[in-house]
Length: 224
Image (cartoon, rainbow, N blue to C red):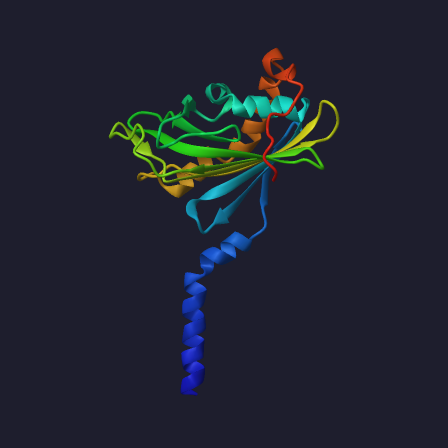
């Protein structure tokens, strides 16, 4: 009986500390749909804020969508509350053709401090299907670090660009962005609930511009 009690206690402890893992295995929850773009969220053990996903068709080629994503300063035109975005190229953070370091600032309402992050974006391609993948993740660095902004502890974003015809791309956008600081998770989740839908909607509008639409060839060459 004592052995059984020990085992049961052990299972309870494991259950408590692995609850985050159960959350990671949970299915995506559909939170809305707008003009054919479907949004989802789910809990994740990596952060107290929810992970987001959006899926939608963009009436532009993979080359055009990729050109937009690679145009870092344009993030201020379609990303959620982005007030500044620039390519970083320093001795510490030196990019390449398919690996780019980016500095991004997110505006926050007063008196909350703006958030910033330094990330690396890696581009790969499945040459058999023409699908382009973009993986974005925070890097630890003191670049532009100061007390005027809060450095976001975690940003992980994945774009999957699947060709669906000469001028159609299925865009899947998955994002986990922890703003850090003392913002309650439920507030962050409420404010960013529809972010994935809005991001793809923004990509739709941006790729109508000739500077992207006229791009004919995909730049990425690194194999996925």
